Image (cartoon, rainbow, N blue to C red; front, side, top):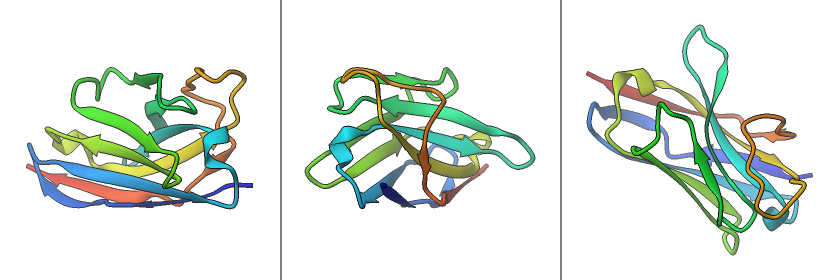
Length: 125
């Protein structure tokens, strides 16, 4: 069973950037498709970005497409979310998640099996 720990959140001004990291342990990281989600205050958790086992396939929500980039380093058991051009509406707790995929190239917007504890991102206007 994989354990996930996010880091890299913080307070940033609008237009700024952050890089979130999610370190995995306890399992073969390269077996998992990975995703990032966020939960805005008072709202349900929403999908942000996903990446396949090898990193060859990615997928983004419309709200972050062109601003955020998901990447992974299987040698370091880590998945990243580079968040640029941040907006106040990006303020949320960001979570990473893992799922055993059906195929090597699959990416997912739901159905994740393992979750981290989250890292807070606050964007000031």
